[in-house]
Amino acid sequence: GTSPCTFGCPAGIKAHGYVSLVRGGEYEKAFQLVLETTPLIGSLGRACYAPCEGECTRGSLEGPLAIRRIKRFIADTHYALENGKASAPAENGKRVAVIGSGPAGLTAAWQLARKGYGVKIFEAAPVAGGALRLAIPSYRLPAEIVERDVANVTGLGVEIATSTHVDDLEALKRDGFD
Image (cartoon, rainbow, N blue to C red):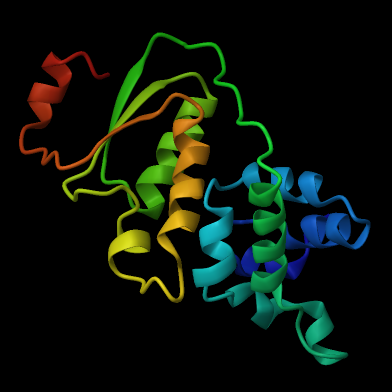
């Protein structure tokens, strides 16, 4: 089934699933379950505004679950163990350009790469991560956490060209992007 908190989550993350896995001590499985939806697990564990907590069925009993803390725990546990990177799936022969390496761009690139597309992100800033790196202060979201989340994306073969401003979409087509 689907819990009400899933509908409250802009990313559609199945919180009830990973909460259950964490309760059973299956931290890596919990990480992988969230990873099915988004590559930004560490960042969300620190910077998400947690609208799911307003929909939490535990709220009327004892208060909503601290979902950010649980997500942060599974990300920190995964990254501390240096678990292996995901392998890139077989390529389908299509190339996609993604403009911007913020949360939406990283997630789009990651989802496309999982389906076999060759993906290159073009980022005007000197670092990848968009608002995660440039708008959220480091005491709230350390740069190394964003870098780990970006590595979830590049681990699938996604290239990121920083300091690259795109003005001409037709030029991307001429460069072989579908």
